[in-house]
Length: 139
Image 1 (tube, rainbow, N blue to C red):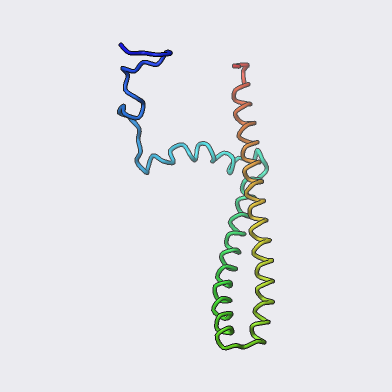
Image 2 (image 1 turned 30 degrees about the horizontal axis):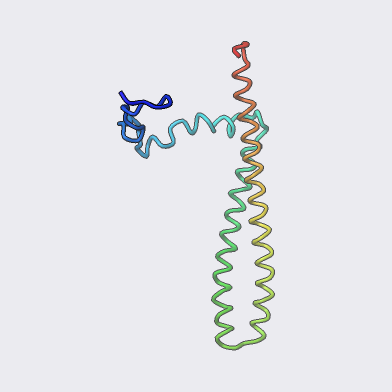
């Protein structure tokens, strides 16, 4: 029997033992709805989660639209560049400045709303589990 400092070297390492885990894709999200469902369905936080989620999805759709416009803008920009059309080039540079400002504002606000959702979710989840833990003085 080989051991040193409380470590038994005759036992197989964790990675080499057979693990009885369900790694099927169908089991990947098992329990997801039980954990997140009440946050989005119960009016304990008065629809904060649904509001944040709706804003995030709306901003994602708006961002997708602006990225489509950006793609069309690139075609016009390089066509004007190739044709050496100075007036069109200046106009497209002004459009570029406006698009960059709008895209940065959308991305920043979407990130802010995502972080607000995270904070609200964590607060709600902490309160929920603390109430369950403290209920009936089971602590």
